[in-house]
Each structure stands twice: as structure tokens, then as C-alpha cells.
Amino acid sequence: MKKTDYISAAIIAEADAWIILGVLKILNFNLMNLLAGINAQPYFKAVNIIIKTSPISLPILAVLFIAIMSFFKERVLSLFQFSKFALVGTLNTFIDLGILNYLMFISGFSSGWFYALFKSISFTGAVTNSYFWNKFWSFEKTETKAEIGEYSEFYIVTLIGLLINVGTASLIVNLTKPQFGLSDALWGNVGAILAVGASFLWNFLSAKFIVFKK
Image 1 (cartoon, one colour):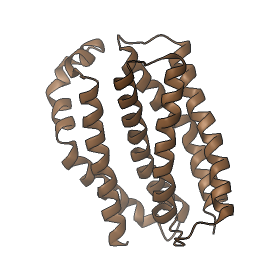
Image 2 (cartoon, one colour; image 1 turned 120 degrees about the horizontal axis):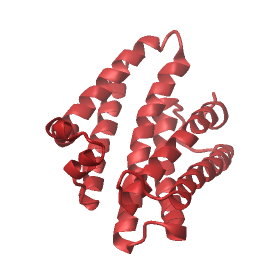
Image 3 (cartoon, rainbow, N blue to C red; image 1 turned 180 degrees about the horizontal axis):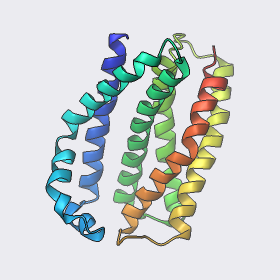
């Protein structure tokens, strides 16, 4: 496997860790209160250590993951591409959450039409990141000059992904009340995370077979 695969995996995971820590700081996240809400107080020390050491542990885990999945590269290339796509997806997710939380924090709004607007902006930022990482790393399309057709295809599938992602998140946040004692802001994050799962498969298949097909 190429050294760039290890380096890319580590960079992605390192960025994940710092964005997570930044979001938790914005939210004034109280781990003990969260664990108390699900009767999991005994795990406080372990979970707290995991969170605080994430800038070290996540890059190591990402490199191990991509190293393991590299064994399938020659036999099932799509599986290896999917593993890289999944790693990029984690960064997309946390960029999405980072922008979303920052916008909610500075505006004071975390529901209604403002939430849908903020989610659209954060999703667009995540998609921009996704485009470059997946083009040059996941699917290794080496052309540096973008084609009009590629941009058009990317725009269309991104728009569909946007509708799936924002629609799912907005329905969850606006049609259901916060559960498990979560605040409106934390519930907004739950909606965003669940929306990722709804659009992930579409994003991979459309990227592989439409936008970045060789």
C-alpha cells in the first residue's frame, strides 16, 4: 500500500479528533450528565480518557484500519475504496457538525427554519471537503483539471444528497422533541448524525459509478 494512504488516514483522523473536541467545547458538553441520563456513570473515567486522548488514538486506529483493508485491494478494489470513502466520511461528518454548531452558537438558533439553513451551509462545507478527498484519494482520479461534465454530475448528485441529508435531519429535529434529556443543540447534532447514515450509501454509489467512474 502507498505511504500516502497511511498519511491520509492519519491526517483525516487527526482532524476528526480536534473538530470533535472543538464541538464539545462549544456545547459546554458535560460528560457526567450525559452518562447519568443513560445510567452509565461508572464508565465516566474510561470515556473521558478516550475523548481526551482522541488526537493520539484516532490516527493510530485509522492507520490500522486502512492497513487491514488494504489486504482486500487486489481482490475487491471496491471494498478498499469503500473503506477510504468511509474514513473521508468521518471527516465530512465532523466538518458538518463543526460548522453547524458554530452557526447555532453564534446565532442562538438551534431549530426551525434557521436550523435547516445552517444544516444546508454545513452540509455544503462537508461536501466540498468530500469532493477533493474522494477524487484524489478514495478513487485516485489523478486529473487535476476538473471537467465541466464532472462538475455537473457532482452538482446533481450532491443536490440529491443534500435533499436526503437536510430533509432527514430537519424531520428528526423538527418533528420530534429532544430525547434522553438532551438539549436542543445536542438533539440538533443527533439529527445531523442520523442524516449521515441516510445519505451515505447514496453518496458512495453515486461518487463511484457517476462522478469518479474511470
